[in-house]
Image (cartoon, rainbow over all chains, first blue to last red; front, side, top):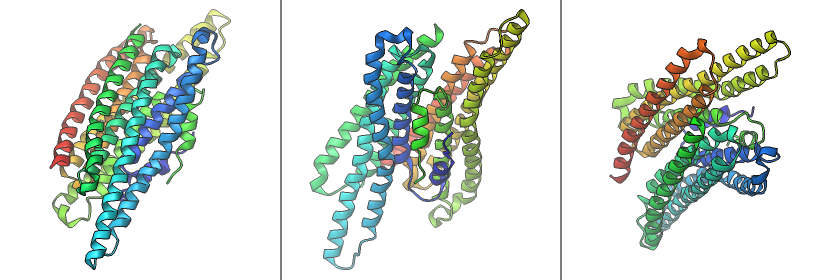
Length: 209
Length: 209
């Protein structure tokens, strides 16, 4: 099996990146990958011929989300590093200070934008898990359940990372972004929970039946 | 950053291992690693000198859980493979059939035992996140939040994998195990939720303050 110990060690280290933001994106990508697995275990099976084309379509969407969320693992770390670079800018003159402040504020907007995108993708992963649980290979129904659990955890983890960055954005020109993002995280978190509750209820019923 | 794409591709593939059980263990290990990171970002900082020895102890526990849960990622896949091997045993004579049935039942007990251990470890990770959130470096409080979200998701994901295996164990000699495990998963899931609610409330308060 592929070796995960390198990532886990880097995560545990005193370096702030990768951190919780990257884990949020990874959780979403793991959920997407499990949706893909359910599709792959359904496609080509006689018993599931009726849902074959639906599963093919689901697989395409899940794979694209898996890759996009995997890309966001690194992008979250890169956004944080950009903020650290901005902090290191000179602050001798008033001009320096203004330039540094602008660079830091703009880096914070980017650092909030990445986990916001992660939340959106995680909610999409959760919506795919609904179809995977309802129509996919019954033997893999627990995997669709794990997919939605990871998607929900990823969405909430990303929400914390949006909020912690929004809290430091004070520049008036970014106020519209802060207002939009503050509202979006509430809606997206509620969507993730609602998909998760729905999918878990389908999974529990199938596991009991 | 360490390359995760290999694991994500293997997960998405039509091979049933690694699957949701391995992801449950990985989620727990990610949570443990984030607890370690919070400790590492706290130890050696003047501002947190008072909790230094506590953080050292927490780090030791988190690192041991991180490694143990990483080991369980592979062990979950191995237990499933052992079940698949048992299914392939000959079933010509009555003796064959009895031997095959015993091997399958015993493999199912192992396949339920691994995620049960994952649940126990995830609850420990969640309990460490409580101290990390309450006493660790405030700048990393969202990471302690992500740690508990991963621990909770890992516990619930593992629960599904215990249940799906318990459902196929019918041999009378394993009844005591089934009863014990059925009860344990309920208690452990409730513990994970309760730690998560508590930690998230601390995290939200610190993020708002």
